[in-house]
Image 1 (tube, rainbow, N blue to C red):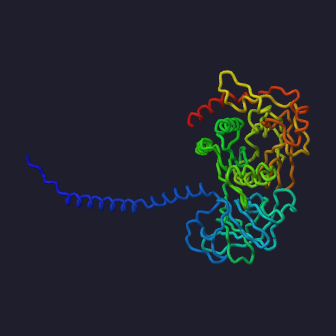
Image 2: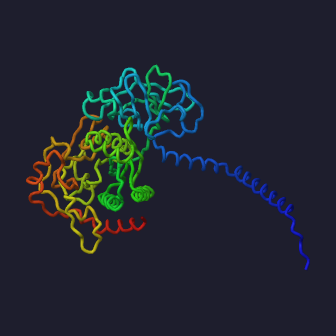
Image 3: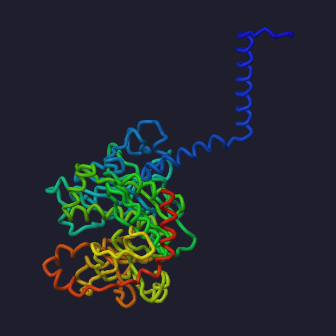
Length: 472
């Protein structure tokens, strides 16, 4: 039999020719399909914005160093703090900037959320609006709103502490939304921040969205969170927004799955300034309750501003709370039964004792909210005790929000307290809050009784929880 002599040299030549042909074909394909490269760029941009939701992608891609305040600040000139905050070092104070949002409810305005050490000089501090990466900024005055306590809190004597503010900047051109915004002094030599402007919109606002404070749990909360999310979906909640300090890997996997389905948004967050951002040290800081409250204001308002142009109502609650209607199946049905001449609806809380559980026959004993049916006989009806109410806000009328009530309104605030015959806030706790601990046993635990109002959603929720936990 005749055999061809094997020649390594010829094989190498053949492989080289094939590689060249492959390269030529790819180049021709690129010419015929010029969007292929832009598709890769879009993917990179999406990945960048998921990891850095508050920083403009345009500033990241520009490589030049900026030498004065008339040029668009790029990545290399930005002063970052704890990953997600940017710093404005002013003569009067230091501002840690988190996010910026377009608000067109009255006059086109950018709302900048920040925390500050000391009071901000409103005369010398300016907004730099960037409408183009190649043009000088439009400079406008600021309007300052203090979001926590009295303005006297905002002093430099507490230099380790930061307090939340909204910096409002009017847009002089009604028909344009800036790409990004910077905060600096009027005679600045260099700008050290550049904040992406969030401007999501909807042709017709509808539905209810939920805003939560930042999550920080080392333990696996996936089962409880799955149940909480599915109950809220049954209550008619269209979107829930979670802010993440750090969570268990399994909990993160769960929330990522819900993010893919569009049920929730999940955003990263840290604390600004000269404070620790590791789990145990941050927990120690938050255990000083006032500090925890202060740092919760920015994320809940970031969530509110993100949703105010998409949803008609925003509800601010925690994962140990559920707003449950008594005469309607969903919150939307309940809202529609009430006159819409309100800025906020406030719901009284009632304790559901989390250390008293009832195993439901024929189901897993892992259910958290359905198993805890023993509640206090007493509601908190003193409207002066704001800490015992949670509120749902009309996004056409409320400018910014607090933990329990609206913070400011477009015109006059018209809060309505919802009768406990219509709905209430089921607050799951082991015991009473600190300020009423001395009277807890006599007033709030004495005569506790079983209430299963939530059970009407149970069959549907159990199926959905089981399905989601299978994925995990």
